[in-house]
Image 1: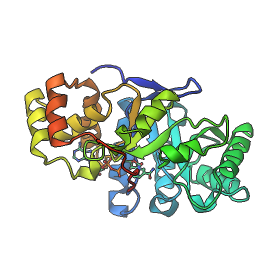
Image 2: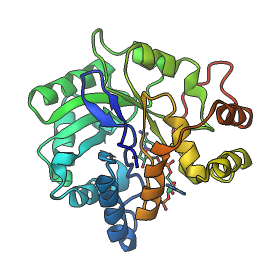
Image 3: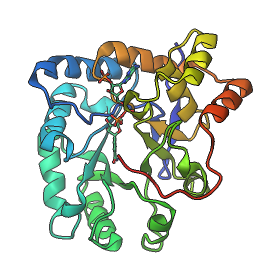
Image 4: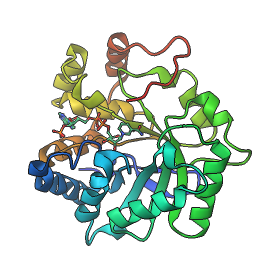
Length: 277
Ligand code: NAP
């Protein structure tokens, strides 16, 4: 197995290209120990970027992550997100400290605005910068911001990532969002990289997978990661899925594979508004 590739954030921090998502974890008590074991298996395999949010299971996903990371916090690049309703000057610090408390940590490595709401971006960025100065967060970023939203960030404010819906069946961001992020040297963090499982039965994906002795999920992940400057954060609720996904880092898609996938999942020919899940 190769080393886990890294991607550089604008501030120079190197993070693993493949991380672990946590949406829908902690929703079923019966799955708790399996989910914790899955996250820990991911850490053993080098998938040390963990993505969560105050929204997920109304805080219970952060609590589950906190438990999974006991004794491992220093190995992990921890990402969490503030709800737009908590993104105002008076609320961000409290939301962040509540997240830290659930996560059993003294700091969050990367804190994202989950999506754009009614609070002016400038106000949220200002609050993030104060949290950063206080050491509560290592850096800040955004999520679900389209190209025109990025242009409305305050002058000189550069997010460390934009976490967006991007996978074979959601290629809209390729039109102008991904190129803009590349210009800014801001890596994209692709969420739902396997489209929550919905694309895994597509014949084109299956046929590329078969040619490599791989699985459709591995091909879907290798495709998202193909450019070298994108981070993918699949959610895997079992250690078996984590192990399968880790192997996507060793899969190199050929030009023929990419061409076949382009036929089944065409790239955008015009601007499509950024989709959200
Ligand atoms: P996803 O990662 O595309 O899909 C997760 C689903 O795929 C789960 O049902 C999982 O099943 C299944 N899966 C994972 N690995 C698999 C494999 N090897 N073979 C077959 N099935 C597999 O979707 P997502 O959870 O929505 O997105 C990933 C993460 O991105 C989230 O968990 C969250 O952290 C983040 N996210 C962010 C936003 C945002 O607005 N910023 C929105 C959505 C998601 P099992 O659980 O059974 O393994």
